[in-house]
Image (tube, rainbow, N blue to C red; front, side, top):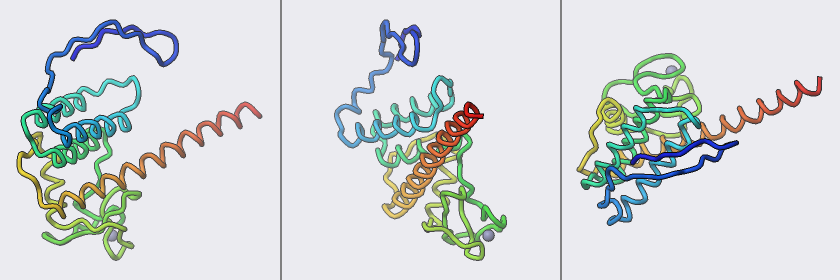
Length: 194
Ligand SMILES: [Zn+2]
């Protein structure tokens, strides 16, 4: 899609015209795909700062829509996009070692995940509220390193654990950006008052 617009005053832009290069019409025939596409755009909107071009994220989004359009598993595609967007923007969690002590979990074992600390935390360091199974950890790492979208569904447990970890990372990000905005606003106000 190409959009032609010019900036007005403030946040609003004046849209002149839009042309569609790839219509992705098959997505519109499947409610699950429509839902996944909407959720993916929400992930991108939440994570990418306003007015900052992120061509790599744009590229992942286009590949994601093309995959959905050609019948990729919708939930799996959404989770894959989410993993890759976080990694591209520098928010990838640490999954190969404890974020506190740096110790690697034994191969083929599950690990505790703590979104607030940004990755897995070993039991000796206090653990985390979510358990990621060995398969989920392996899947996450593979998906992050790849640019393909799976046509095959993943086992439910695996998909749900990754989905839950991503939701916790998002919730943590939303809370910390609100705190950041609040403290910036407070600093500005204190600055004026003194
Ligand atoms: Zn540790």
